[in-house]
Length: 414
Ligand SMILES: [Zn+2]
Image 1 (cartoon, rainbow, N blue to C red):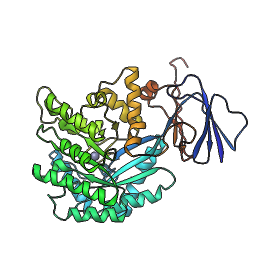
Image 2: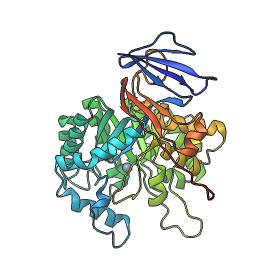
Image 3: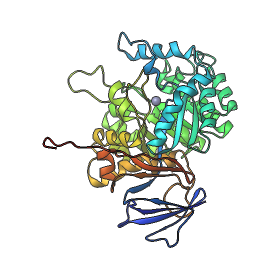
């Protein structure tokens, strides 16, 4: 099917443009395309972007906030225990049913690619991965969906998890996850990284770890991950989320680690909203907010992305999930508010995570995949300022969502 999206604004180009789609591809981008297609869409002068990429989302745990018991001690440790209560009763169907509305919400908000994390441990076994693989089947053709086999309780803290991770890769998990900093010793953390990289190499998978998600300045797994990634030749195939300890290092050490990360071609994901509520809680006086060194990583040329992480679960009560909202938080916390910086933040929810996920043919140009979001704003600033409706979302040329908002203002004398 041929479609035209008429009269849209594009980043980095003046005026309005017509974009022609042919099947799942962009066929042309011109100021005016002659003739009508099978289907015509009115772009109404709105900003057309490649679809948002949410590279870190815990869909097995999402929406537990509606059913979980209260966190009496209001601590991370109890949040983890609350999650365990549910993990014991998970079934793949229950996980898929609970998470499907969250995936739908992401699509409505313009996300066309999601990397979903599933816990792999001796409590839930392979059930969360099975649940997310079921979810992936349900959303076939509607969003790009990757499943990460993620050892949420560590690998060596819970003997048997290594074998479970291998099983999950055999079941069809797309990405090897990791949580090295959570091991009891530095030696075990390094073994954890070695195991994950070896499993990834053996199964030809990308790697996405949660790294140094702590205020502890002596948590130093990012540097080892960077060095080992380069040694294994896995540059461009490894991502690291959170990296809060990097913000806690003294500046000299942080600079060294950032250099190693750049060398290793690792993408850093900032999960800004979750770091804001989870980290720095034991600080008194000047309170750290636990987000990684976003500006310094960007300045060093590291690929930096932003993702939602949690949605209404024992760790975080909010999350729509909406990548524009994620970007808005990142702009606030990272002091990224000047015009060129806002463009950078927009890259952090589009092209940068697309590079991390190695999505082929991503962008708006002839030949690119027609994964697109039409935002009811004329520029990036207003997209972040207003978080407006996404008028249309296309996945592979298929219109998968439309939104509009109406508000009525009643005047006092009316
Ligand atoms: Zn996470």
